[in-house]
Length: 414
Image 1 (cartoon, rainbow, N blue to C red):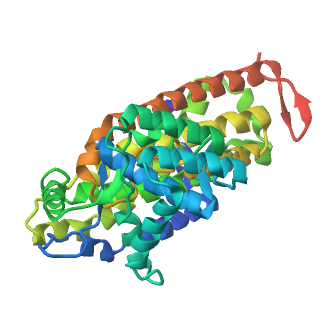
Image 2: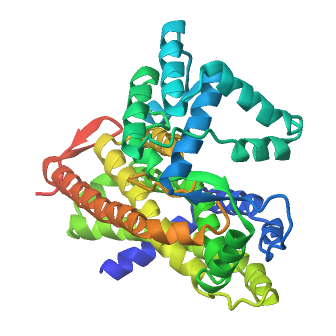
Image 3: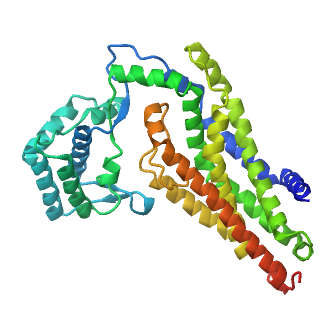
């Protein structure tokens, strides 16, 4: 009976215009983000170049230098970037607060504020600020050397004081500093990164992460429309009384609906991934790497399927509870909050709904954070099943105690 209901639900979804809008929007978004130009950055670096990009460093000296550089720049402009509650907020300090910050910088560097500013201006004058590329290089290369006797723990204590002045959500929190900072990549590091890309990621693994990064953004919202549409379909057709009185268990009804929506929502993800991975498999062979033919499938299943599961579970639960479209607004708010709370686009997965890895490669750093991603996705997979179970309970309660159809109360199944 469950299998019959599941197939029936899949057929119903295929008759829905909402589903085809879902597919079109998803495919258009992914194809606009991933293009063949990505392969231009997948070539072995040559010695003697001015820049080899950036890499993440967890070296404590590097963290102190780059954090101080950022603090100097923000203090110079009196504009501090913070992300309280996940949303960007610019903080401007008064003269008294600025004086405290500059004093902390002086204590960390052993130089007066005027000297620090002069060195910063001299550094940036060597780059053409009207060029985006040079401006980025200037920012990446800029660092402020702390006192040799300043320990990392003492530095973090000072940064905590900075956070108290600026407010919550700044990048000077110890847990964020410990994650490392972006530093210029050397030729040796560039060669090592390319070798990791070819051997550990086998090229397609790195592209699959980018695919999941972009897909995760749109999948944090799109499936909600499928879930809401399905939950309200019986009410629009005014057949809720018939369904409620049916002898089939609530678990079979809700379970088959939920599973059908998950499978149908995941199907275009798999098909899009299958098509989009082909040129990258070919490119991998041209640079002497053996592509991982199942990379897109594996990453999509681990990375994106749990996200689809939780989004649909929430839509089923809230829609069944409220019998309206409020779950759309709840999910959109959750998705936006998760997107803006991702200060770092290379990991820092935590319990974010949208798992970000918006960089090509970063193989070594990703494998260091892989367990955190697996915990994140596992958490949402388990949570989605728990939410579906609650939906079954609510649905069964309505069947036994009665429900509403467009505001009219009727008795359910006894």
